[in-house]
Length: 127
Image 1 (tube, rainbow, N blue to C red):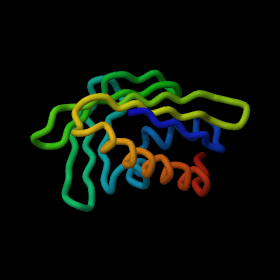
Image 2: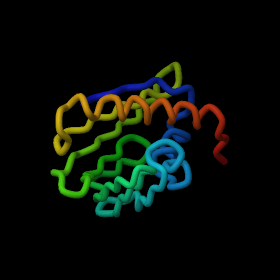
Image 3: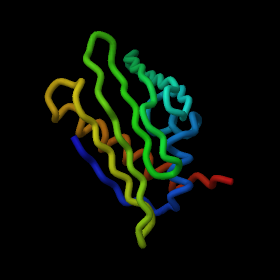
Image 4: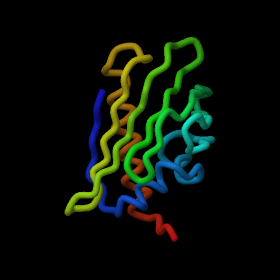
């Protein structure tokens, strides 16, 4: 599964929205714990009771973030997020491989999440 979105924000602001727990809780999951370093823990809790846990696999400051996460009883999937400066702002690309049922199941969820990210970047001013 791959999704890309053009964001009207500088790459540094987008990176903050990818690595700061308070901002992640506004678009990725209802509650997020993230230690944004290789080997760091990722925990995402959703309003429906679902929880995903994993580990950060790669951090390239302000450019790439990758983590493996899994639902209870499911195989892990790898999420790779790339941040790229473009003339219009920032191109954010998300790739998720493995771990979910049909590939179509991940696509709509990421489309919704990325829409939420666009909304918070439009109203959040980061220092």
